[in-house]
Length: 471
Image (cartoon, rainbow, N blue to C red):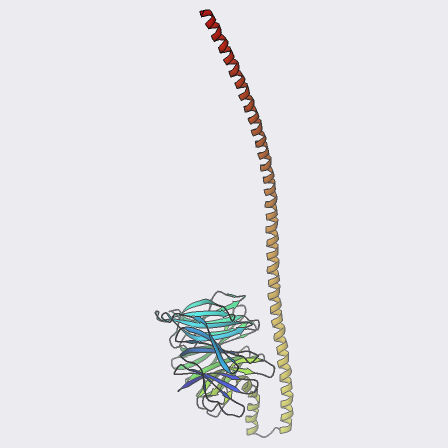
């Protein structure tokens, strides 16, 4: 049973949880305890097509996975037992769900996946679901035409203020383009094309630093592997930088920040190289592990820290006898490794002085890092203040519009009252005229009746006179 390890969780008590999906579509896990022994691999569920994991600060493990029945299921551990429920269903005759990713923001879980249309060659629907634990809402973000040899079609990133950035690749026939949209205030922004990518074997990683987006691309052209960096500023302006190229296979890129610096890592012949970006250029690649390690792979990893925080990152490790290499840790040893090589060539530096120097540099580095953190926090607060001020202005504009509408409504109401009063007066006048006309008509009818009676009396008298004359 071959298992492809995907996810690692290093918990608060130094246990390592390993999750994997094997060739038999069995989702399994095992635990490496502090004593250094793995538990027997245990089954979570069968007939699984894809899965994703998210760990919360309270040590709770969330697993989202899809199966051959077209179901999206949620699973978590309670009382040492995995408890799962179905949260969504798709028709297995039409679609297959792939490439799951999940982010938890507050009380909501944001689930991303590709809907593979079985009846359409190359078409995928990039979908986004929001699940609050009871109800689920689904949006279709984009209809994609996929590139056949792509490892990842999209990447999801959440910034410090819980906005979601989505970067995805699409085949636009005449070029392969990288596109971006963001989810803010419960709405998706319009999709924007960032740039086109040439070559084959494309992979990419994204990091959002403050309000800027950094994208690391790998591609292959004419049997040469290229790693390039595209820097997209908050105003939309872009810069591109060459990181590295080689005729040897480059794979499993990692892009991350450490303090105020941006780093990139990759594997070349199962050796780890990394480079640092100083806002103008990338440093010459540094070899971390000169010892050849077999079967190095990249893991998705959650690391629990002593600060009651969970860090999600990507790391390197061996797939059999587990050895892990965490980029955020080994880049800190860059200066130490270089100084060791210098000292080995000439023993000119006294060890005690070197140790004192290193301690001072370490303290200085900590002060710089703390200062940068405060600087970044201040910049973030300024950005949030600007957004809050913009929100206040929006509310003020809305209130002004409401007051204007109320003023217009009051005018209309006053006019309506005047109109009603005029109509009432006219009705009263009409009623008065009707009454007068009725009285006139009654008077005329009475007079007519009197005239008819008088006329009848006159006729009777005339008839009597005529009769008497005849006699």
